[in-house]
Picture 1 (tube, one colour):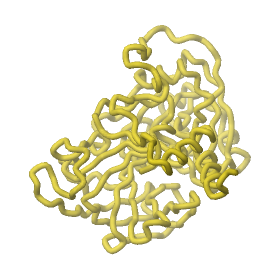
Picture 2 (picture 1 turned 90 degrees about the horizontal axis):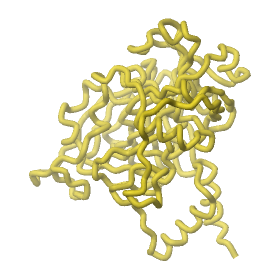
Picture 3 (picture 1 turned 120 degrees about the horizontal axis):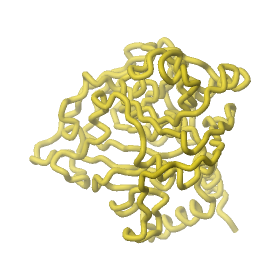
Picture 4 (picture 1 turned 135 degrees about the horizontal axis):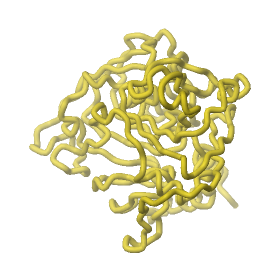
Length: 369
């Protein structure tokens, strides 16, 4: 007879992530028995390569794209906003924007998009269930950001001027696109073939590695053996209605690819770092709300611009995890590698097919830590 508590956990994981029930059930049973491999090898780069020997993994070669029509399905975290957008595979340019505005709005390393036909404001408002937030992107100019009014998942960016506006194009947020609607051939293309905006503004912390190169150093010391100190950082949302400061613990940065982080950010992942509640404080909270997003945790979210700012886990009541994408660049050290004793990729079994992990030799956990 199935354990009710385990079945409840299986259902919770599967509700939030595109993972087969049996896979989650086997994972939990194996954990109880102590014989489950929690990590992928560091050579793991893509879910599309899983189970294939390295020499048999297909390599995408840039060629003339097909004219096949594809309908991408997009869905917010709570399910209030769901829609399909048809595009021609040969015209489906993937875009990564590194400008400060896109990074702050998505609270991620960059805004991840695919160009789609602009269906008009009424379409993007999803029957009145989506909010529009206007700001400026350094690459696109004035834009309307589209997000769910209930869960604040990021859905699209609508240019209001410039080349894309004239061409009748919108930028669909890839983080909210369901994996099953992306053909593997298109996913492999987007892994390596994409246009980048504002590369000079790219987040240094996204490619940071542990100081000294030891990702398994868990003793709060740097590569030189000296004890690490906490680092005081400031951060906030896109509209400025919520601001905080935190003395980040000399801990571990976690790049999370779970479906919640992908949908709420609308991008590739969200990166989290720990801070004790004693060293974390809100300096402005005009539009702040603490929202329960899972059965085991809550997130602080700005209700005006939708910025997802922290995670507070029920099992860690004395700790708050700020999202690194909301931190001010000016408050981070130039040497981002020196901030952490460990950097890991987590929830890699749930990673979107269009993303390929870097060859960084960092640990890759199949689920959360």
